Length: 199
Image 1: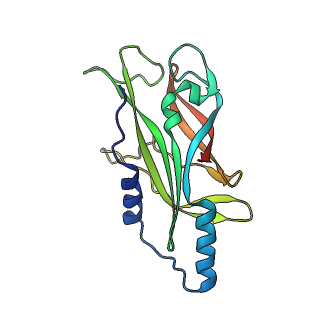
Image 2: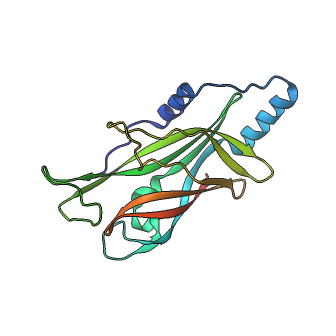
């Protein structure tokens, strides 16, 4: 069973716009021209075409390890990035599947190994942040991304922001992230290089 998305795509956009205060304006013709040029170049949805981990992992619990995460976890194939360019802000969103592990009542989660009586489900969530774009290096820099806080008041480490984001071509975004993946060997920390393509 796969949990449905808890928010529609437009809800993420509205929430991101509402929660992040605007501070930059375009006040002259040059700035307006720059805004339209950047919007034409970047503003779009980009869908995942590859996700390679720094080491082989067994995410689907079949006993075989692979670096190709699209093969290991079909839910990752639903991941995508949004680059939203507005007159007063640029907003980055990355939609990624987050795992939920069900453990029988009275039992504590063993994070060092997978157990067949655990239930494993995924739900797709998005993280959002303002960003700047460097046209010379084609790098996207997130501006003070805020961590996701869980119900206990602690940072939920399942929600991560990319370490590096760049435009590989006009239609492909590369995002490199450090993630904890739940595998047959328990949680494993890997670097993931994901490429997203504008369709």
